[in-house]
Image 1 (cartoon, rainbow, N blue to C red):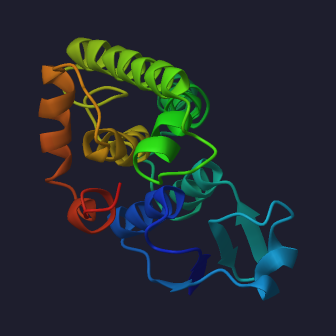
Image 2: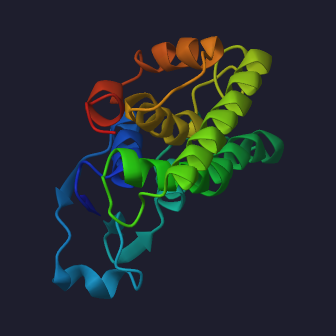
Length: 199
């Protein structure tokens, strides 16, 4: 059985748990403790243990699970279709996460180190602008981020948009994002791992 290490409320752990649910994979989840430090030199979650194989970085774990356990619908084998999924996964991990970090730490975590109003405003604006890029993308594809089929791109961006929706800030109206997020609710694991009340 797969072991996933990390708290269930972590946005990055939730990506992996949702992927497991969609793929129908059995797993057990363990809370992080000091004994796990040897598994990830970054001392961060999630960590996946699959037999004697250990893997960290949430999007990489999602790719691995889809690749090993029959998830071609989530991550196609064909190079161009696969690249179309992976570019949006990488965008989520780099551009989108970088944009929201300061605003989220200030507005949700109430971090004392993130209380500069100008930086909160700049982070919020960047976050909104990037969700606007997602809205424009969905206007092109019509259904899901990488095209007509639900994929890993929708899983990793779904939890990010859930965070955006739950953060107390001003947000523009993005009808394509709203319609897409509603479509995600039809997929297994959405209520448990995405729209579960955790930002």
